[in-house]
Amino acid sequence: MPFRPIFISVLLLFFVSCNQPQSSALPQTDPDNGGLFLPIGFGALVVVDSIGPSRHLAVNDNGDIYVKLRITSDAPGNVALRDTDDDGRADVVQPFGDYPNDGRFATEMRIHKDHLYFSSELVVYRQKLTPPSLVPTGKPEVILTDRYPIRWHNAKTLAFDNKGNMYVTFSAPTNACEDQRLTSLDPNKIVRGEYPCSQLKILGGVWKFDEDTPNQFQSDGQRYATGLRSIVAMSWNEDDNSLYAVNHGRDYLHNHAPQYFSRWQSAVLPAEEFMLIKEGDNFGWPYTYYDHFKQQRMVAPEYGGNGRKPAKGFNDPLMGLPAHWAPNDLLFYKGDQFPPRYRQGAFIAFHGSTNRTPYPQAGYIVAFIPFEDGRPTGDWEVFADGFAGVDTIEQMANARYRPMGLAEGPDGSLYISESKEGKIWRVLFTADPNKFGKAQLSAMEKRKSRSYLRVPDKQTDLLSTP
Image (tube, rainbow, N blue to C red; front, side, top):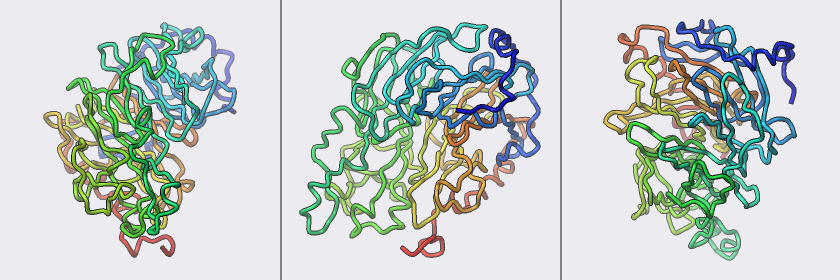
């Protein structure tokens, strides 16, 4: 994978061996905020422009940044970044990672108890971080291996509960455990789902493992929760010591049951689910989906649903979020640089939809959900916009960037990665936090009228004849 010549320097080894202290002064933001639209009082700068397609990232206590690359070549699968002159921009860019890149949905990058944990599609690794070195030394230690072949939705997202446990996602590769063999003889041609769904034996859930035991397999862990189709955004919230995640809702309601769901309904349903996950919870996949307009869990059409049958006996999310937006990271803000209303709230990186045709694609933002007394206070807010670079996203390829990963720096800055080119932004607050309120949010609220953020009109927003 090519890197820009500016990153290659004879001083690299010297910089890598130095532990650069972080200045207390915030760096200067870019005049155009790196192309982002943010609430009044916030600014952004570009940390690095293009390190290659990237997934999640983590920021160490000294400001060093570690990024998981989305590659399948023999090149190193991770990148370490260091700012040596406190201008907020990475002037040391060091690829590393002595392990095989086994799939393009290699995802996780987390710092936990002085270790760097990261995941390919099939393996969770860790390495010890040893200051002042930037890059960890030695071969990565294998913590967990998925022995099954690579499949769709294979990202291994991690969370840690600070009691020695590591939570890992094992997502399902289908929309609703559909089985075309059951569909072919159906005169109504409604796609049918396997019952009971055999995928739930080893997929569609979150498993709990010991964070320190090497060479574990799925059978060494315990299933923590089930009925979860696909989770890439997951985080442990230290405020209430609980696991939270945002589930990718299923697709193709119209394709699977055109008698009951129009193309418009298929574009706006079902919800992406923001969930508080407790041990033993069952969120109903594949037998159900969540309708955020009705605020009800519904029976999936593959299992006898018609868009009007509520489902019972399953856990509900904290709130439903817009359909198909692809929530790919979740971060609870703990710092004090941002105004007080952001503390303890949740940032979500929406990677953006790919399959809402004949309507515009949607998402492609970083949203914020305020919390109060441990619960969301209401609707989601637009926090960072401008990634797509176009007003109407006809197809995913039209979007210049797709926000992917979130990390909080030691000074409370918010770092955002994107998956197309590997650009990273650092968002700072530079105004008086005590004067921040609704007026500063009003411009961002107006952005919800854009075609990629609002519910599409059934007729006027069509991109093609349905």
